[in-house]
Image (cartoon, rainbow, N blue to C red; front, side, top):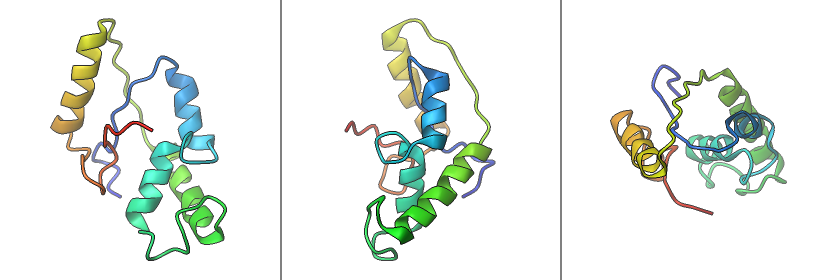
Amino acid sequence: MDVSQPVYVGISKRVITRLHEHIRGTGHLTATLACRITVTEHPPGEIAAVSIKEPAFREHFNAARGQVQSFSVDFVEIENPLELYVFEAYCAMELDTGFDAAGSNTFVTH
């Protein structure tokens, strides 16, 4: 992964807590970015299963959390909710963080 290229745009009411979750989280609901990186770089056909309990997946997932920890972060505070959501999508498109299965931003909720 080219870390000179932005890989993710996100919004959160608890930014610092959310960043810690991306690094220290233990599954796809907390360490979402690390999980997506793992699945992108090691598709399910290359690893036993897309399960945090599988040793092969867990090894790659832990490495991805290390990658995420090395990323730099920029913050933009936006008060207006509509502007915030439009700005998030705009930044993801402008920075080319990806909208397909291989990208980090999908805007699919879970």
